Image (cartoon, rainbow, N blue to C red; front, top):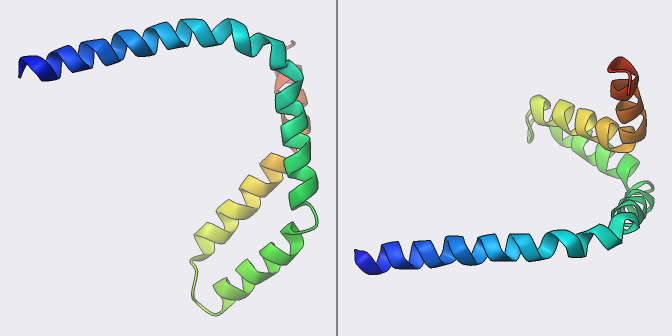
Length: 95
């Protein structure tokens, strides 16, 4: 039992030290997240209509629940409209 507690304490201490070390290093890559997101959007944009059509056919044939289809559509709208959503919330709170 003592070894489990010792291992857990060491793991927590090691994770805390790593968290402190990573924070300053990530500050230099502020544009990398935007670039990665733009790359994903460019990759998925031509594939998305086809995927939605296949998903809708699967729903029509009864293989997939309609709730999943609605959730996928809402998630897609939020992902592709993230800039507009952020602007809307910022205007609501006056930021």
